[in-house]
Length: 328
Ligand SMILES: [Zn+2]
Ligand SMILES: [Zn+2]
Image (cartoon, rainbow, N blue to C red; front, side):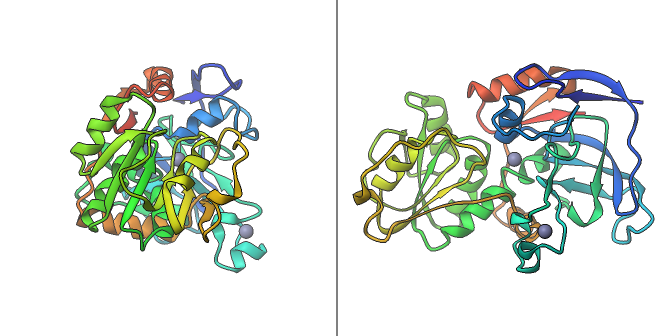
């Protein structure tokens, strides 16, 4: 038996329960979880904003642990290997998106900690194909936030590769990682936080942002591009207004509140507005190779599994700078 944090009903606290240790199928590995970082997507699931979680779900999709058992068809991993697991937990390989090398859009995708059980538990399962080898220099706790905040953030970052002046709206876990990468690549970061969140603004400046301010503020110069991580639809017209002609605004989160109507002038001038959905395995592989070169240093705040609801609440209320990681 093992301890696991279960989502029995949305909008209710997770319940720590004793359940059976899961057995891998032929394509899966069983992982003893050491650390699992908390993502804003976990909040959207627990709060019922993403409406198709599996029953009795174990959330958590930034998992670091060791392989304890391999399914009969698993060839690239062995017992004892340290692995990471991210949000995309399964893709079918046969739908039109998978065949077009867009596995992140797979019609039959399954997601860790949403349609598959995740990492807020002692043991979990993962499809071997979707496991990551982790860079040696990162202890388990520091590695965990690289798996979604880092890897999905990096997918958004790749869309703005040519931007010099980059705005980031919402300065949480993904932003604190991407800022380090962007500064390393000689980009100028303009950090937009919740109004009055001086802590987050100082944190951004400390990480190398050239400017930090409230999300409703106009930056001192027009941006080449912006990434929005905060789940706030009204930031889209804000970000478009702050972006120059031909610029791009990328929505990096899985959920947003309703977007208010805005004047076409904000989009006119060949500005591009797009979303980033999930990630491809190769996004994670690329990012995990790049992170040690910067080197990206994740600032983590640890919580014990028994305090998982406090961890979720602190993220919801913006009480932490950096990434929350649950110790298992
Ligand atoms: Zn597919
Ligand atoms: Zn995530």
